[in-house]
Image 1 (cartoon, rainbow, N blue to C red):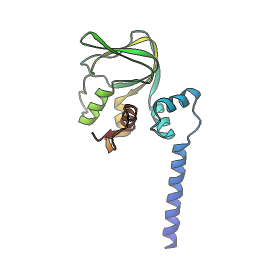
Image 2 (tube, rainbow, N blue to C red):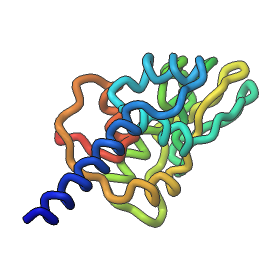
Image 3 (cartoon, rainbow, N blue to C red):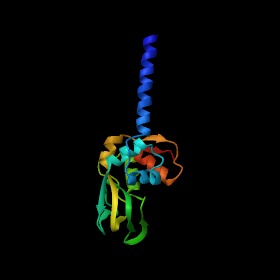
Image 4 (spheres, rainbow, N blue to C red):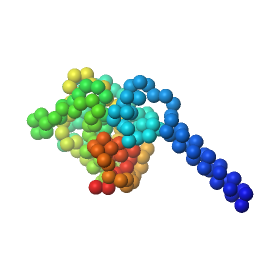
Length: 173
């Protein structure tokens, strides 16, 4: 019994250390600190760190094409600075500003359908407007890292839905 107790204490101590490391990772840059607070508050600081490290920060020139309507795009974008315009059937439909995601619908549909080949087409043509900074995630790498989606409680807001998606969770709707 004493050995089992010592074993369980050791396991619990290990888990406490892991939780503390997840809640208090190394320092963020000023930009990442603001980004975490503004757009990714449902994530723990450790989850946010892993998410940011999984993506690549890019600067897109004016008019760069992010997605093309009815074509598969295997990338997910998050607008850091600048904006992008979306058109459907050649008609301008909306402008996506700082804090907006690009291609989440196609990415979510692909994950929910568990398609490994082919993918799901984008819902519109999206182009950067002016110089635009973004974080880009390759969806294939995300699928390899996260694996199959698992259920979670329904998101409270759109931002929570995006955060749940990025963590690899699928809302129960």
